[in-house]
Length: 93
Image (cartoon, rainbow, N blue to C red; front, side):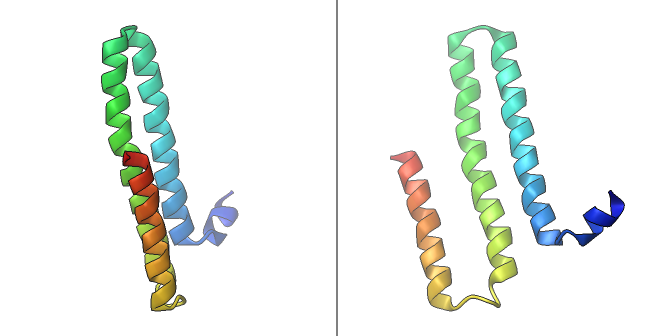
């Protein structure tokens, strides 16, 4: 197991770690909703998740793009940035 983890790129490990953290937050929110057993409180918990999701997305994408910045042209970086912006626009509209 140590050997396998040593072979994984640190950027990929960071991105995967953030996604695992996001999943744990989602699971704990679901358990919290079940324990609260109230629709109004469940909506409040869900509203907090609406904040966490995009933050994890932006952070994960930033880590990946910083790692690839020297390999991509500026126009490709702009297209990727526009794509992320459109995803966030679609989420909030």
